Length: 129
Image 1 (cartoon, rainbow, N blue to C red):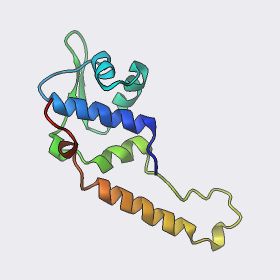
Image 2 (cartoon, one colour; image 1 turned 180 degrees about the vertical axis):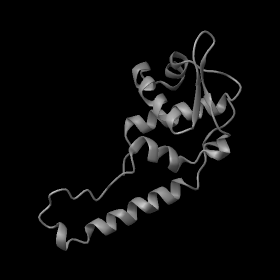
Image 3 (cartoon, one colour; image 1 turned 30 degrees about the horizontal axis):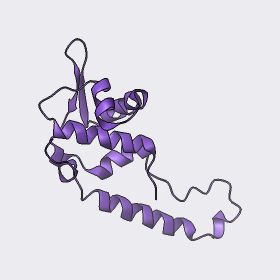
């Protein structure tokens, strides 16, 4: 399994914000610090806001910060928001779909992946700045 760069950037942003809990960070600062292009950081942050992981403050002196304690942010929840669920068994118009057992195996693998990520919190993957 491979996560998209979008999810990678989202996780980097969360790690940085988790390491700096008392600081509002700008998109520019996040981009520079995590090594992600600024336009990519601008794309992932609205999803993180909608997911309830970060809060944004507009205007002069504004920025982004965690909306929750890092112990309350499960990586599985973040990946569900950024990846949309990882449907590994997308059969579409496959001629074999009616007599195929591959979908169940792929669904089980996806479920196991998310169960593993649900045991890891943001607090588990950040260290003090």
